Amino acid sequence: MVVVTCEHGGNAIPKRWAALFRGKEGVLRTHRGYDIGAARMAEIVASALHASLFVAGVSRLLVDLNRSPHHPRRFSELTRGLPAAEKARIVRGYYEPHRGAVEGAVAAGIARGRPILHLGVHSFTPVLDGVVRRADIGLLYDPESRAERDLCSAWQGALARTAPSLVVRRNYPYRGVSDGFTTAVRRLHRAPAYAGVEIEVNQARLGSRSAIDAAGRILAESLVEALARRH
Image (cartoon, rainbow, N blue to C red; front, side, top):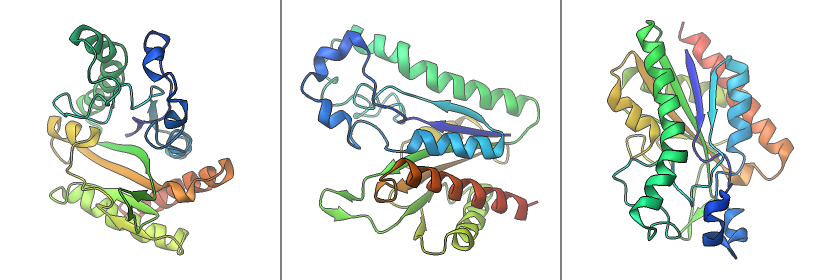
């Protein structure tokens, strides 16, 4: 059973907190507000794999659904100073529903004896803090998980055959065991019942709707091949 999630799928700000973001509309449209192209790529991958799909539309600048409750950047500089009651309202309204729905679907599948592959779809800015990211696609996973390691190795090979011009790296531009939703769910379920992989696509490759669709198809087609080769 495959579960596809997108924690940074949109840049919506609910009306209750709109005043906090007045004058920040430009920032909301950048990678700081959401993961450009990620929601559409998640849709394409989920459709190809007949997977359950969970896409969050609220901006990460309101609350970051890919961060654990203890993480200091779960709330952004725009919401970190809110009263505790307001932050709790945001958590109840947006953070817990998304993560709870995904965790519930994963647990239900495992309870039925169906191993889960959880794919978290994201995109990354080409340059961060003056450093150029040297990859088109990153596959993030736990190197200690044989299932995740083998899948990402096979997927990297399939991507090389599907789109040989792309630079595909593993555990780049982030580590697969850093704080994130797949890392959190991995702590709840042991392998081989659960495997979680975070997909990161360089936003330099996502400059138009057609480019985003092409990237989604490349991810989907290569993953279908990689999964077929493992069985």
